[in-house]
Image 1 (cartoon, helix red, strand yellow):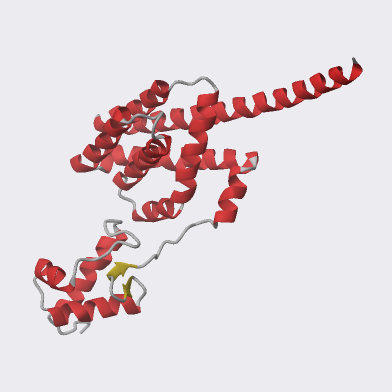
Image 2 (image 1 turned 180 degrees about the vertical axis):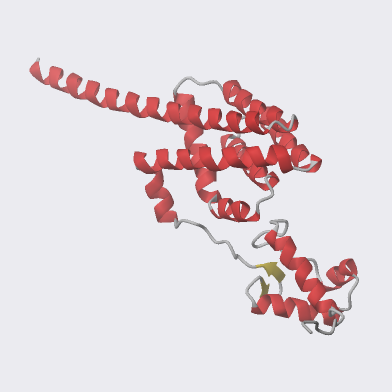
Length: 256
C-alpha cells in the first residue's frame, strides 16, 4: 500500500516553514534584522533550542545570515538584477531607457490589473496612504523623497498583485526603478509638466484600484507610463534641436 506512517512535525521545522513563507511573500526583506532570540522565541511560542535549530537550518541554506554582535538578518537573496555600471549605462542610452519604460508599462499594467482583483483591503490602504504622502510632501525641498514615494507607490501595487515571482523580480530591479523614477521626473518637469498633472495620473491609478476595476487600473498605469514615454521623446527631440541651433549660431558668429 502507498501509505507512510504520519510523524509529528518538529517545532524547529514549523519555525523554518514560517520564516520561509515570510521571506517568500516579501514580508521579511533582505538585510532586515530578526528580533532577538528571546523575543523571537516568545513570539513564536517555542523554546530557544528549537529556535536555534531552525535558524541554523535557514543559515545553512543561505536564507539568514548572522553578524557577530549585531544579530541575525535576512540574507540578500535578491541582490540587484543589474550592476551599478549597467544601471548607469541604461540611463545614458535612449534605446535602453525606452525599453525600460515599455517593460514597466507591461509589468506594472499587469500588476495593477491583478491588484484590482486580488489585493486585500489593507493592500489598498497602503497604496492610498503612499499617495496621500505624495500629495503632502514639499517637492521643491525634497525632490528625492518625492521620487522615493513615487517608486514606493508603484512597488506597493506590485506587492498587492500577490505574485511572489513578480514581487521578487521587481524588487531586485528596485535600484533601476528608483533611479528611473527620479530621472523621469526631472525630464518631465523640463517639458513644463506640472506636479499636479503627475499626481492626477497617480490618483487615477489609485481610484481604479480602490474601485477594484482591473481594466481601468491597467489602463491608468499604461496611460501614465505612455505619458512618461512621450515626455522623454519630446525632451530628447528638444535637445537635438537645441544642439543643431547652437551649431547654426556658432557658424553664423564665425561668418561675421
